Amino acid sequence: MYKDPILEEIHKYREEYAKSFNYDLKAIFEDLRKKQIASGRKVVKLPIERRSNTALHPTAS
Image (cartoon, rainbow, N blue to C red):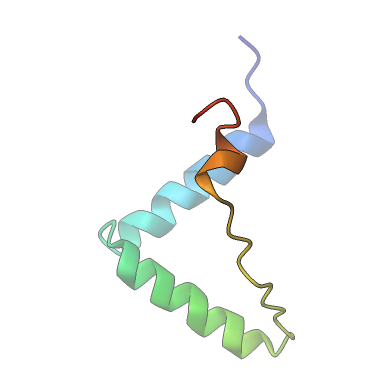
């Protein structure tokens, strides 16, 4: 199987990053939120598009 060195590097970085927060998703989220705010870039929030159950499963009655 072909190994992509770029993907391996990304996976290595992601693992190190998660490990640095002891795999705590809340802590990772807070860190990313701080980085997002510090970047000064405008963040666009799109409205959540809600779909009915029939839209997801058209064969359901």
